[in-house]
Image (tube, rainbow, N blue to C red; front, side, top):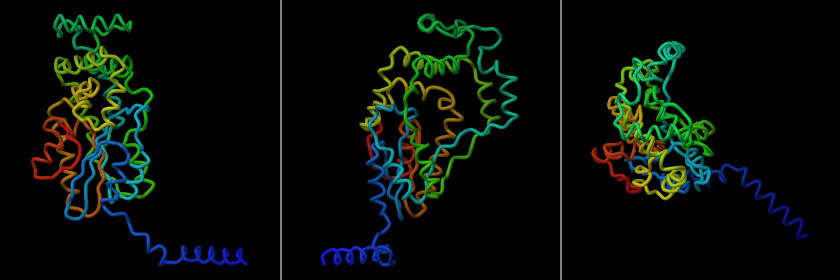
Length: 312
């Protein structure tokens, strides 16, 4: 008899689950619940309450080490419950831009007119570069300072080895699966970016080179430290990490014209999102958010009340 009673009870339960009343008893997540879910991911983030919802600003760093303890599945879950997401865009390069790069490649990869590094660098700067050339058995003498900096960071320091997916990639895939609308900044044309880079004075890339040399000289310990500080929400420490300083000193972030346009795009999209109902989840490069005069400073200056970690 008890088996029959248990069967009846289970059958009634399944019938109830299939009824409209059962589904109606599961309310949609509230703005606070979505924010809490996102925060449980362990990524640093800031929140802005809006008249009809909230905005979540996730501070993204590129190349998060696999050893950094965070839970991207929580960010995926929050994305699926959001009303919309805002993600960075990538430059739009056309086939014509590729040909321009091929024919003008020397202007990007080498110093102009047969000049060498010593023509631009101080004695101390050239000595530091020579020490790195000797350590890694490479010749940077005629290479552009920007290309040298990228080589030091990506190949010698190898800061982007053994990393997890970036927050942008995680949120993008989750939004696609859940049919959550995605907004991105207007793409920079590849032609404009290449022209901007080709016309830059070689000396304008020296701060980038210096920062890349400092990061490489500091050694691989700074890679784990950057990830740990990011996970501990110690934003000033992340921003002061030699890797982050180098990335922030290099093109395109350090270019005044491009940098201002990038910041303006983000502030505009976030301001627009504040007028929309529901929860907007935006993944923004941390250096754009937390730098002096960056997006968080600009939003605060416009009167937005921002909750989250101290960023400076």
